[in-house]
Amino acid sequence: MAKGYWIGRVDVNDAEGYKGYIARNGVAFAKYGARFLVRGGPFEAPEGTARSRNVVLEFPDYAAALACYHSPEYREALTHRLPHSDGEIVIIEGYDGPQPGEG
Image (cartoon, rainbow, N blue to C red; front, side, top):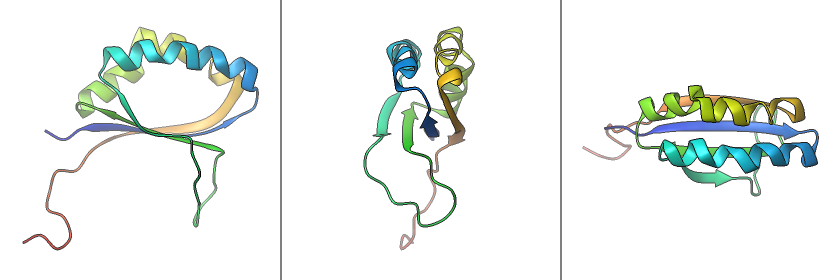
């Protein structure tokens, strides 16, 4: 079964206010089996418009990724992110098919 992912790109406008989101999002992430693959860090954006913060979360499957976003736990955490940041989140199903060079 393919895993599910969140790809988040965020500009934090109020670092102090954003701390409330960081303190609360772990409840939903733990409940739905999320694991950080990318959490900030250096990056290069050779195409498109960059955001200052990039995050990739892995979930056991696409259904868990969707359920986490729509859960009461994450919706509560989100109320602490939205006033203090601008960004996008894409929720996407992973790929389990053939890879380049595989027969």
